Image (cartoon, rainbow, N blue to C red; front, side, top):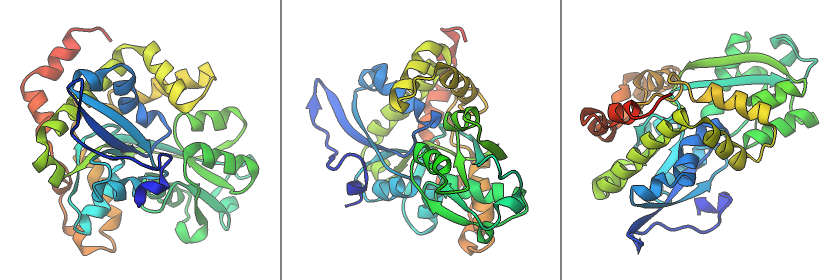
Length: 326
């Protein structure tokens, strides 16, 4: 069972009624600011107001999260674009229905003595899992340093805090980190060797076309919760920082504020949560160098925009932001 790899060993999905709420177990593969929409939706009661009783199950990496999604063990997931695209290219019916984070930013952090690509060559770099977001962006970072994946050893470490720990302990010479752990690493004296920031479909809302067909109203309510949670994050900074600190167990207020303010910009988390076609194109481009299917594929094949478009066309999102100051 894929879920045996998660931190929760037994889950189920059913449409049982408890106070008229639909029970829903979702997958999540991030311990970073990218997880904020689902955490805020749960903590602020947004899921409940949309008729959902949501349990969040954590997986160590986007590839495993996508596998659980395809296996129907988690019908909806907070998952990054690369494993969804890769799975769909292989025939799975995985699809992105909300964008979440559409500008990805990772830092390749290294030990203080490693300040160039030449010094990193022959060393090891910590990522989450092969085929996931950190893996994809690590290859871009290495390319910017004049290296490729063959010049280093990519090591599957798991969570971002685990990668930071591996770097600090000397287990690896560098690690792909994003907020808030990149800021924690910098504060502890580690070196920012390379920054990768580009339009890229990061952690968003993924599901399957089968689940959409069979449960369109559940998907509709989840996407509406996502939009409302992003709005709450943009209009209630204190609540957002509290949620971030709770889920990441970080007491450092300075790091939390820096990470939060960097994360919730309209560029990274747009109010209108369309999946990023430009970001999916960026995922397809390197895959297309070796995979004819990826080369011929169109970004539109990996998304279902209908639920966000419904909210947008109805004026719901515009009205949401008109009612509150940012």
